[in-house]
View 1 (cartoon, rainbow, N blue to C red):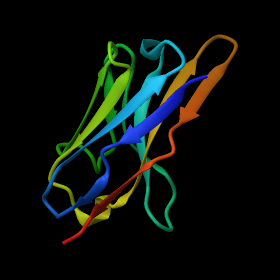
View 2 (view 1 turned 45 degrees about the horizontal axis):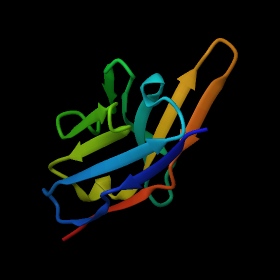
View 3 (view 1 turned 135 degrees about the horizontal axis):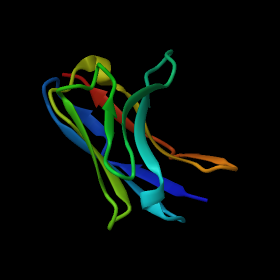
View 4 (view 1 turned 120 degrees about the vertical axis):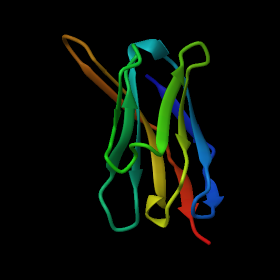
Amino acid sequence: QVQLVESGGGLVQPGGSLRLSCAASGSIFSFYAMGWHRQAPGKQRELVATITGGGRINYADSAKGRFTISRDNAKNTVYLQMNSLKPEDTAVYYCNAQRTTISNTYDYWGQGTQVTVSS
């Protein structure tokens, strides 16, 4: 079992920056691929970025060049640095931990943190 707690959301003006954090507990953090997803009102949840335990990174096209995902395995924490924020980035941002073994797939979600980009 993995518990995930997001923080760092808030209200920011267009062009501003925010750094989201997701603290994990309950299992061996480095075994898990970590990701950030978001869900805007009336829309489906979508992938923002992922990072494997070994550091391989993937970004959605909407995040490339503006967002940076990183992880600190010693602190059991994954981060999402968001720069040049746009109103369309407004959403609830969710942290995800995923691990696949021969016999099981483990998939955990945090409760989300609200990001609002508005002037």
